[in-house]
Image (cartoon, rainbow, N blue to C red; front, top):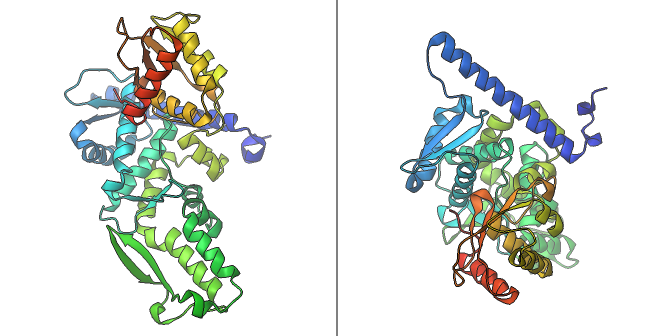
Length: 395
């Protein structure tokens, strides 16, 4: 009886174990190929996918090397920052993901647009970037899944549905464009004369670097007015334009990049929302006691006053502040899809300095604390550190 033929019977944790086993098997296959190639051809082949990148040229270096090593994308990933010492035991890899995602999804970079109401992003229909950049984003998503790394990416579920070739509609648009969707719903439900009140033609609008652009949804769409009879057609065409046709070039490249890494059989076990969970992590309420159980200490004892005060402060925080502290600590405000029990945290003593703010090595999920005089000061210093760092330090 093959449970994999009935994915609805398999828990999320079990699916992830199958995905990780599939990834491990494919990585080991690549490693063996490299090993035997080295023996029989007397040619040294790296058993890992090693990217050597410059911080000041992170996107260009990453894109070039990923393109040069397309056959090696399922090898275990290692990162080297040129001109810096350090062996990648996982921390440099996490830092590479953090910095690269931050750059690629920066609104100033122009590849994605953000909605102020939902705080979610979508592919920019007016982007000047070539398809290779979107291919890179898809590869990064796939690599994150295969290397068990949570990404701070704010793509809506519609993106993951499209990855699985599932249709998307007005409900999906409403998740990341709520104001636009609300306007469509008002149009569809309006009981008066739509043409005279709304004065809309079959034209879609979008912003192109500060300028408003109009695109006809039909031939001569600017001359065709929206009426009570054709309003459903107008909404359907507009939704299809936003979710599909306007970003077809960008999304197709993104999808190719994703499947180039994640095109294994294990992917078919997941639903779109489960892939989103793998990429972004879980937004369920934080289990502070479980986080505490997964934490090790360097320079502190578990029952020391500073540590007891720290966990007490975190427990007393509002859920939003708890997530801000987790973001400061780990670089992500979410926990793995399988829960906090799969997190590994570390709190380190920073030395005999009582006026220095806490800091965090997010690449190692490491928080640096000092032995402040009392709980009140510890709380104040944590809040100042979170505010001044705008979320997290990357070190």
